[in-house]
Image (cartoon, rainbow, N blue to C red; front, top):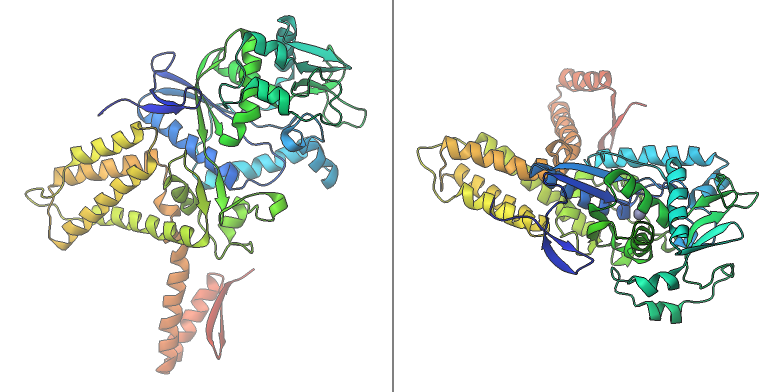
Length: 490
Ligand code: ZN
């Protein structure tokens, strides 16, 4: 390998050489979804970005423990300390049990992840399964003097904390500014200062998800669950914590404060954040009417989407940008990605068919390999890996055209390297590329054309045979003046 892996640490704002705490092992924690609705592009980006990190670390020979949580309780509207719990609200509107809502959307999330070829994490803990541990951490923070109890709720004392520890290092926010600019919010009068945040919230009588605690019936704060579940499974100090850039403040900043207040140290060694996605240049959101779900991208069933895009097209499109750059989804850009992906896998098929020669000209496998590793080692530069793969595709066409040649030994090694980077590390799937999803339609066009040619020359036996055989396969042909349409039998 040319050099070692360097990753951009949000905390130091520098690319740092990655050195795990325990040689050969990596602890990786990524904030997972709050499951109260269908997954959208905002869920796909961190899942895919950190899937590539997980795959690459594994490829480098590390034994990775990858923890990605499911938030099923405590995530309130507006990500603040007031308002309804997102899961409970959905349960009330749909007349479902909160856990029914969680299971329903978790199953759909897992299916979307499978479609995007995102590997499942090693551990997928749920907040509601760690109530005792969360109460224990609240207790430790209380004992250490960085929290206070008020009317059955426990709040983090940010002012007290900031006297001893720096707050705001991750997001670059200055404590004094926060103190000055924070608005007095309604319902916040229990707090010593509006910027304090809830570790434990008292639950009202109508509240659906609540547990007994030393402070009365209540539920844990959203920020607390990640501090608890990460240290529970990865230790009080662990290697990498990832998530979307929108979580830097307040979620991750609060996680650092909680862990430091409870354990005396910030648990995370490397903080990594993926940038956000936009759709047609606009931020996505339910209120903006442009929150297209992954399901709708895959089916094409949304007014902003011109056609169905395969999960691999979405994955490829996301990886064409560096994870710290913004990505803007649009129909033309996705259609270009679809063609690019098709070209990549057509190139791989061309490689498989090449005839080896006595010597190799115009290609160096070691240069190709070094360039791919250098790109991955430079903070996961997936766009550069993709451009290297396209170099290999161009070379394959030159060999096919006879302008270059390659030995059997070099061809085998090139195929191996190509598959390592495209399939194993980037996680792209040839079977699920745009090529295969368009193949059935293209084949049907061909069959229908052959049948209408048979009818033109009055060969009705052949035309009828095609119709009858297709019907046995569940495909119905409909003839009209405009031509022949086909559909699958219900
Ligand atoms: Zn989190």
